[in-house]
Structures are given as C-alpha cells and as structure tokens.
Length: 107
Length: 120
Image (tube, rainbow over all chains, first blue to last red; front, side, top):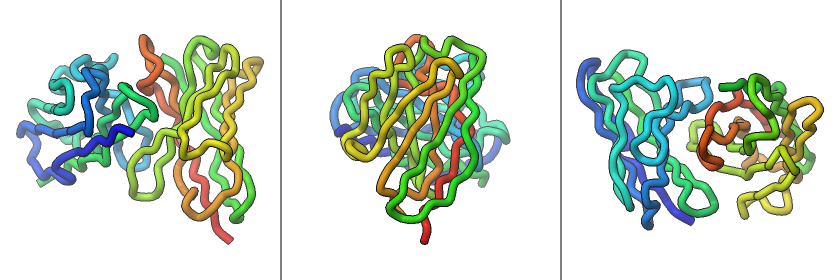
C-alpha cells in the first residue's frame, strides 16, 4: 500500500498570505495525485487532479505541483473560506489511499 | 456535474449490518464508477471500494473484503453499500463519491455523508 504523509499537520496563517502544503508518497505515484478540501460537517471537494490540473470551478489561486514522491498544494493568497482541512490522494496503485490531512487554520 | 444524496444516519448494535444508499441525479448513472469512502470521527479518509453501475462489477479494499457488499439499482439511479459484522471501529461517516469526469479513480462529486454509529 502506498502511504501518503502530509505536512505540516497544522498550518496557521493569515488571510492574504501564501500557503504551501506538502504531500510525500512512500513510493512513486508518477503524477497520479489529487488534492481535496474539506470543511467541517461537509464532504470533501476535489481541487486538483493529476498533480497540477484544477478541477472544474476551482479558483486560480489554488495550484498543484510535483511528481514522483513529492507534491505541493499552493494557495497563492488565502481567502477566509480557504481555512479547512486538505487531503492528498493517490491513484497510482491499489488500494487508493489518502494522506492524513493538513489543517489550515486562521492565525 | 451531478448530485448524490445519501440515506440518513443510522445507529446499530455491534454484530449487525448496515446498508447505506446513495441516489444519483443530474448525470448518466451507468457512465461513472461509484466509490465509497469512510471517515471515523476526527480522522482521515479511508477508501472502501467501488462499483461499476453499468455492469455491477465491484472492487473492494482488502481491509473490507468479506464484510462489504456494494450493489446498485440502475432503475432508480441508486448505489448501496452494506457493511456486516459491525464493531465500534466502524463508527464513521460513510460517503459515496462518483468517479470524476475523465478518470475513474478520483472523486467528484461526493454525497453529503451518512453517519453510522455502532453502540450497544
């Protein structure tokens, strides 16, 4: 099973700042990695797929990069609605797996 | 884009089964895999498996093999997930999630989630 490790576990930033969230895979996943956002009491929402492609309707301030084992989700300028938990997910090998999440909180 | 609406919260005793439904609308139900993902309270996401609504073929995560059954009723655009032999460790929110357009192993959109509580 491919293990995804996200860091940091918690990230405290202010609106307007830039956020960089990391996801490291235990073995190469190529570019087969997605990012999701989850707000309290809600289902996750797909943000980025195949490492760098924004899903439909996702604002341009969200971007993804990386390949192989190291990936980054960047939010260029934080809006109040961006404070949430973010998960990465790989589809390179079964079983499909998620990272443990990064909580992005308001500083 | 589509919408998924799940059945309501359940409280179950240990050892019994639970069956959660997921009704799809706004897209071709048989054209996209349906996945199931669960989330224990305060924890991360765990993929359980998927079903091809076109032919009913399923793939289950090894963790759940022998304990989960995913089915569908295409006449009512609804997928089902049944989990047997419940224990307290199965207390979680269960989500259905459609395979994202253009790929069958990312998830978009998701249902609202169904809380299953296992308690005696």
